[in-house]
Each structure stands twice: as C-alpha cells, then as structure tokens.
Length: 185
Image (cartoon, rainbow, N blue to C red; front, side, top):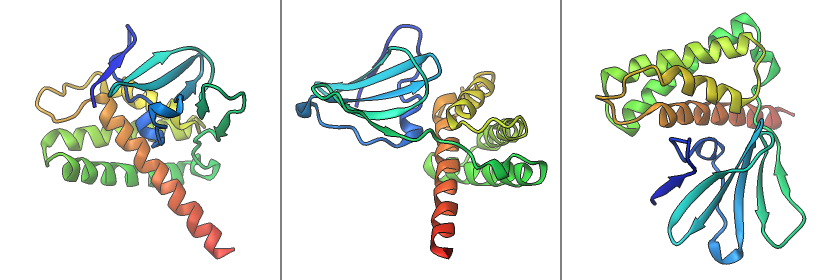
C-alpha cells in the first residue's frame, strides 16, 4: 500500500506499526488516530493510499468513527516499572539486542548492519529505562533519533522500521510476561 505524509514527516508508520492497530475499512467512515505529546496523527485509507496527517495532543491510540462522539481509547503503552532498575534494565536491553538482531536477520536478511542497529537500540533502551522513561512512544522516538545518525545505505531497512521492530518486540515481551502472570494467578 502506498503511503503519503504531511510535509515535514519522513515515515508514515510512526507509532502505528508499533501499536499494531486494526484499520477500519473506508466504507465504515472510520479512521485511526495515534496521539503523542503535542502531535496527533490521523490515519485514513483513501482509495488504497494511507495518509498520516498531524493534528495535535498526547500519545493515546483510538479507533474513532467519524459519525460517533464516543472514542474507544487504548491504554498508553508503558514498560513495567520493575524494569527501571540497573539489573533488570541491563537484562531487558540485552534481551532486545539479541532478539532484534535475530528478527532483522530473519525478516530481511543477515547483514553486518543488523548487529550495530541492535546494539544502538539496546543502548537507547537501557538509558531510557535508567531514566525511568516508561512510555514506549518516547522510547521509540529516542531509538529513531539515535538511528538517524546511522548510515542505512547498505541495509534493507531504515531508522523507523528498525525502531518500530524493536518496540514491537518489547511490546510482545510485555504481553507475554503479563499472560504468564495471569496464568499463575
């Protein structure tokens, strides 16, 4: 699917890919919005083209019918607080480094750049955890900022796709841990 963006943005799947949303068909008159800090992104499907348009607000995701007043809000995606101490932060960042490199190798192809990308994302993740930064949207943007200084010339992906993959893996890990805890109780 072709994607377009409002001026000043260079990647349309920002937040949306990481959140794994379900897009509502055009015929329903619905659209997806992802809010982050002072920017709200509206994503709509128009004749096969996904458009992402900035609006304004804070990071919340909702599926919102155009003709209804009620929004169904999804909770902010946050890292568990117990991961924000040195030992767990180191363990989680190392888990991300290993699994992100494996995912990039499997999803695209094994390449030298995957090791550096994984190290950078893991380092950013560790520092975010140590700074008590729990919001996955913020962590995503920190990873993007760091990876934008990396040359992707000989790589199959870019800063946003790699960062989205990292946050997706973190989200899957959080969900798996929550599922395990629910089964124990």
